[in-house]
Length: 459
Image 1 (cartoon, rainbow, N blue to C red):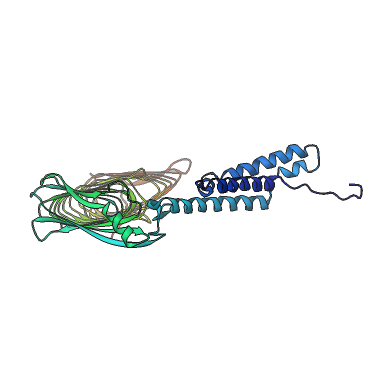
Image 2: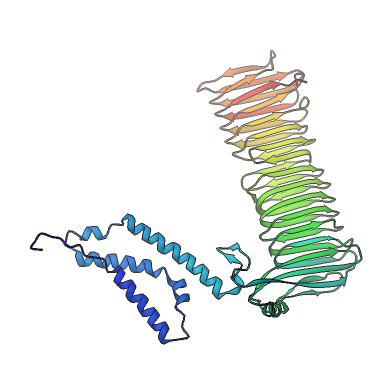
């Protein structure tokens, strides 16, 4: 300007935004059947596209001026504006889904929130039917808890407690009639499930309680909800996609396929197999074997298992003859009381073994290994770790033959003898070879970037 004052040109984004919103609501007023809210909930990211196009248009309009470079920069105010649009858009989309789709009233961003609009009403269905001894009962639930226990009589009794979300009791009762508990199939393979007659929009959840006769196998399945089974006399098969599982006092084999769940299994006369993924796991007092397969984020406890034990994940492969004591994970991999062989391949664990009397074979990475033997070794021992120490403690009167190697490390030994020598090699390597006592049982220890320690125990 002639007076030396410079005027900064504003962005066209605001103008374009006002024009677009005005046209949208003008069309909504002209067309009564059209609702702009669903369109805004679905296509709100267009606002971000508009913003980018307006900045690009500003650049071409101002190209060749001092302001051209400035309009392409993203300022702190721009970032705050984008975050506001993103957060507001996501919340608006979720709220619109809740309002327009009653079946989603109980979830926002996948989280259970119950009945957001309207009231909750509860209704009860019951099914009673005879079941042949030795039959396999299938019990299915869509979303809600399942509880099963031993029946005092020979008939199967199932009670379903429905929770319906509706504006009135009359509406809730009508919706409830479209969601009935049903039994089908012959007495040797009966199935109890919910007959939905479509998908009732006001349905929130349904809790199922079953009293199962003696000597009946049970298969339980739910998409969302906790499962509790206690005191049955038969095999149990559980499938749960989201929800915790508690299984106690079962006279039969137990198989669980669960996801996103904590698992507690105890007092099982038979074997146990738990697959898939979840959080915490506890398996105890099992007369048969136990297998834990999958990825588990929480602590694991296996105790008093009288048959073979297997634990496999991407990180760990473990087998043991049985566990009279317990295995726990969390801060480390701790095992106590195994009257038999132990094989372990894992990484990033601090490993601590006690009272293992069979063969021991351990491979670990990025973690120390400590083994304490209750008596002189009678079976071979092989321990290998990288980036970690090895400590092996044995009674002072032990007999063994040892070969130990510490690459870029050292070896310390409380045991002495004319045939037991530590040899320092080049590049900070150390080797220990020889026999103690009468020799015989082979021990092989190998570490990289660590220390090997042979300790005398008190016995």
